Image (cartoon, rainbow, N blue to C red; front, side):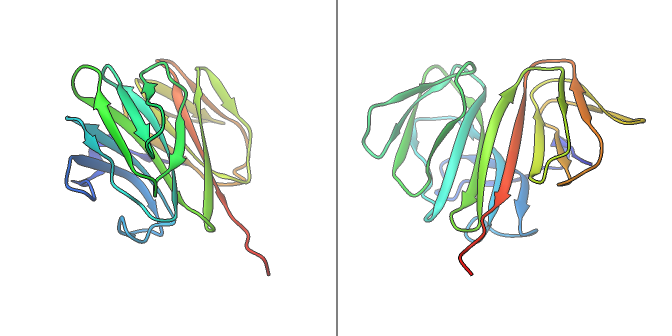
Length: 192
């Protein structure tokens, strides 16, 4: 396991310049916002406006702080997203725009490039015990949490992220604080 501390996350402007994104993890390492296979990030949404377009990418958005937003995807009916909403998946290559409910929002974005990776994100109440899995997994802390892996113990602060190796032996236990977000990434196998 590896802890990705919030203080070490990489800050950069949005692709469309409309806000700031905080990159937690990306693959391949060092990939840009144009050529990643998968990307986990936080975004600060400070005003109403369009989302960046990412051709060939699927995205899931979850609200982490603030009063929420109204999200319109590809001209459809607006979706209301807030702290109690389930993660919202949508194609990142469709036009999407947000209207803030009442002030700044921080959201979690998981993006995977179609044909290379797919993803799933689950809001998990704590304590949660995670058995070994073949998927690459991350746990994003929303508050203060304790983690235990056999005799190893560590603490997570808000927006710290725990990276779990695939097929890691033994159970991880996360306890304390609020819910956590479990992010699972799956390589897609092409026709051979």
